[in-house]
Length: 595
Image: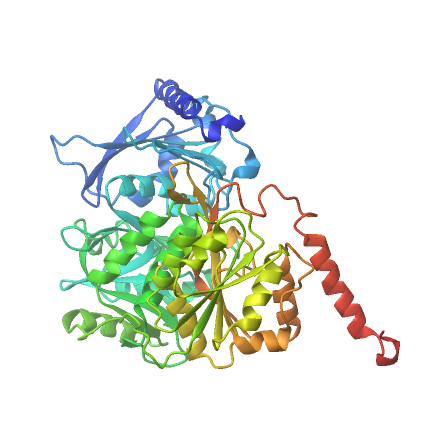
């Protein structure tokens, strides 16, 4: 079983088993529906009437494949209860399944494979032949959101194979074009999109849409359904007659079926994207659209939640969004309470575009000096790439400090060849001691940490420093860690949802220098868990920490990491927890009783 993750023959055998199982299921009955999505012909095949009855309604708006055109992609779906045919046994350890569904360590250039616990479904896509397979044990067990956004993982892979992209975004428009609304959940994408719909605007989705770049950026409707929290149903009373699940529980979102009532407002040919909006709720009556947003913030808002949810979304997704934001202006949308005024503002923006959109931050000489701390141990091959990544951030005031923690290879020699690097050497004492050495000697007002295994996404250093500049009370800014696997050929492929990663990570974090005066340095006794320990102490002291909605560091796993193969005891999880308890006990003792 363990060889499956790397062995293409075993992967191919499982894919053949999936294909054979569907063929057996389809011998009893099969329904085929050809649809066009973002200009790509896809044939949907169902070997179970119960399954097609659940999955097809939200896709009925997609136009049929023109006569004479052959679909280049197929998705075949079946369930055991409806067909009597099970899928092949999963050849992977369930412990390897990530929150977003991909399989940790699964390396294949040909196949994509995901298992979604929420549906208990298997999705497989053969990128070489364009064939996708979806299996679930019983269609009746599908959760409500699967009917609202069916086959999302496979449609994501279909769009990816065609050079397009599914985005976690909403879109509305007029005859003048469309507006793409992006950002994490809860910021107002769905409510804005439905407000536009009820005020006569075209609607291309409230949660996920398909986007193409060529010849010009364009957004296409993916689903003809919409979702809102149940406490928002009253705001959209006009849609009450189209509520699919009126008896749903409090945690179940309300789903509106927009067909056939709003069919005319769902454009078959999509809409040219005229602007990107990043919404946020404001305590005011009228909504305001302005350009007070940095280009990096737009990119991260568009990319983070998409990568968080779609299996195997990674560097290609970031590259796509970077290209999109270079070609389409972006603005901040401050959402007020007046819905009619909001729709009027959206229509006015399309009819009378603002002169400029988001701007790339161009830090000037008056931005504070940042000392970048890089602890290294036997990293002679990786160090040049890490240093190049730091320099590529475009930050004008940098001090790069490399601390060689007793390496036995040529790491120190490599660092000495770099004219802009301050090198410190010490006997091996662990990363906490190495970072402390650098922090003590740092000259910058800000201190940024980057481990020698890791990389910053493009523009991340500027993004983090700018967040602290905008909030003088905050002393720490960081995002989430995006895990990545380094293949045998050196390629880096993202794995899993960033929100599944370590909750605290020094690499990819920027600190005000004063934070270490208040909290103290890293605990030199801890070779592992020193990051968790420091953030625990920062929380206890009331240090203001900014957690940004972005992946602030790419953590590359290659088998040579210090944490590779370590158990919880070796990683000091219990030891760090005990330190918290010891501090609490000490604080509870009368001062005369303390040692």
